[in-house]
Amino acid sequence: MDKKVMLITGGSRGIGAAIAELAAADGYVVCFSYKSNRTAADSVVRKIEQAGGQALALQADVAVETDILRMFHEVDQTFGPLTALVNNAGILEQQMRVDQMDAARMQRIFATNVIGSFLCAREAVRRMSTLHGGKGGAIVNLSSIAAKAGGPAEYVDYAASKGAIDTLTVGLAKEVATEGIRVNGVRPGVVYTDIHASGGEPGRVDRVKAHVPMQRGGEPVEIAQAVMWLLSDKASYTTGTLIDVTGGR
Ligand code: NAP
Image 1 (cartoon, rainbow, N blue to C red):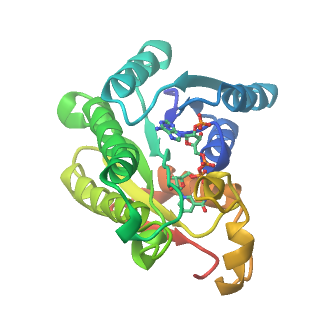
Image 2: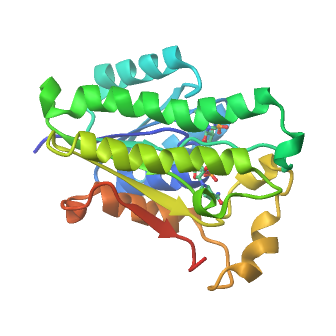
């Protein structure tokens, strides 16, 4: 049987790390990128290896095209054809209103969340598409329920970047639907990870959970399970779809 090779961007912490662990347990050879936290990346690799899986951590900033090209090249060289891509790396910045934001911040958010995901999707399609001699595959993009809610007074820029991810998901899915590639997305609600500290409010999940119908925040593994289903053959007729994993929000 062919080896299943998955690349996850931003797999060293949070939701990406949970996806890496589930994927390895499911028999994937797992490659994941991180930006700067080598210690966290090493600990995910160790955990996967201790459980009998295979993982490779690659430093690569998805906001830098040459880093993306190097990352895909290393995956090709080390493990061969990619079968799954998870565009997970995403950032937000200090909570503020749009009338306080400068252009540099908006460019950072869009470079990482949107252009990074587009370029990784492009590289994956070049490898997976039957049009390019590939064997097909699946892509899952991490959006956010903020794409619908808008992120007012916190991060409308981040929310808008996730709106772009929703459109990438739908458009690319249709573009490659006859080329053996399925493209889907997951829109998490509030999940217990470090990302909220980047917004200046590490305890944000506990503040907003009263507004979640299930009255709690999500755990990274609960998002990872939806990602794994979308990548699996059980979702063989599912493409261009976004699953909200939000506790009902
Ligand atoms: P997180 O805990 O902040 O982890 C972010 C991960 O992405 C880390 O592994 C980080 O690497 C990596 N990363 C950040 N910038 C990167 C870059 N430029 N290039 C490569 N890797 C980069 O984030 P998370 O909460 O798990 O979020 C994962 C995804 O889910 C994001 O797309 C986020 O927008 C989305 N999401 C999260 C929530 C939530 O409540 N947590 C809700 C909705 C959507 P380092 O360790 O090196 O920094």
